[in-house]
Image 1 (spheres, rainbow over the protein chains, first blue to last red):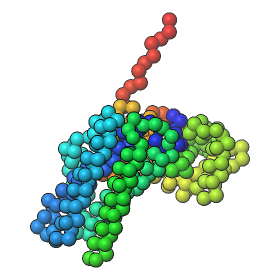
Image 2 (image 1 turned 180 degrees about the vertical axis):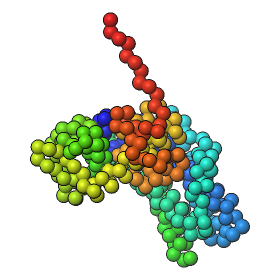
Image 3 (image 1 turned 30 degrees about the vertical axis):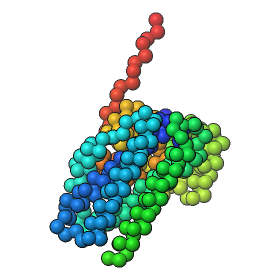
Length: 164
Length: 147
């Protein structure tokens, strides 16, 4: 067995880039799943759920672009959206939503997961004393904004779920 | 995955390969920490009812500890599979080791929605290669024999 690391810090540019890539994939998963929800529930979508899904997809695309700008500064490529979309499609048959409640619950999981990911990432960067090749303040500011938007997303979905 | 989970995963794999209690030395070696640090964390796991330490024998996970360890191992397999299959990372084992502390279980669950994990996971984990046995692994380069 190989020795594992027990540190919870981001130790290098490469590791940071990889974590940002994972963030991009998470956002792409949200976009792709939201798109599928649209297609599958199209005829029955009510306005509130439709707006929620449209906003979520738009926000994910915006987060993705911001993360892409960060990893570009680290000289790393992002994962093409089409690739993730086809992976989501390939697996979707097994996790098909039955109704609105499933769609909303899935959306809640998306937002909560993204929030947790960015929150852990921010902490791991703050705990690290590594000098990254991109500006640390800008990096943390971008991630904090994205995290706070995910928290707001959790609140919005929860409100819609409570009203229904 | 937090530090406690990394320990549980390691103890699980070590006790499986040693076919009995895991010695503190083996756990410390596998984690790359000092025996004193390993002892300290093992004490905490005991307090939480996740492990039992027998003097001169070693550490054994309780049933609750085994459940948590298997979850942690599954999370590790998800990270490896995601790196190898989605991001096409060649050296996915060493990257997974670096990333496991920063990737939470809920995040791993989401990543799991786009990878094709086998139902036998985490029993597919092979400690020798530090990887899911269902993943194709590039053979290690053969060192030229010394004359």
